[in-house]
Image 1: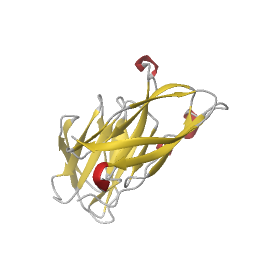
Image 2: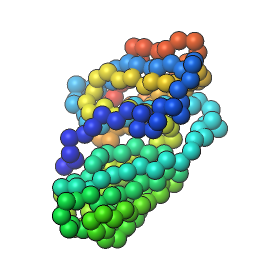
Image 3: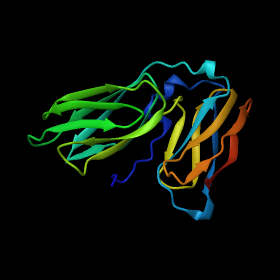
Image 4: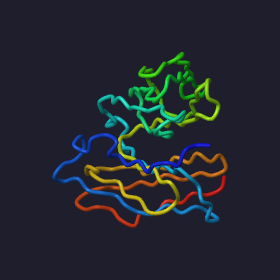
Length: 202
């Protein structure tokens, strides 16, 4: 089981990268068919013109302490790197690995104070584990964007500092029996509010 999820906003990447005098926000609500309380719904934006998805690679950090990953859910983009830092108080080793389609890797054994690193080169999602501690589990989600928000449960959301232009609002749903359709939106001279995203059964 994952740890209690944190609500992660796009501020995981410094907002200064996106903030501008004419930036706006997009806000709305996520509704799930049957009022299913799905967890970790990721609302994100992609530019309608895919050629505009250019950004500098970022290094993300995941701590390992108390035999747990923190955070245990992380959103990255292709080209980014993820570092696993062993911050245990005692001499505890961890071996981080994944057999997912997103990225299959085995980083070997990392002792206390060590930093193990892996690069992400495509979109997708997958779980990672510690072969030493069977209850250690996390999820890596790679999206072609820097604008996203992770919802611990269905409800309201806000995406800040959105530059003007044409965007596609999408949602990553980890539950295999549910899906969500993308929504085209145009950000011009005002912010967009009351955007409704629906998650339905497949």
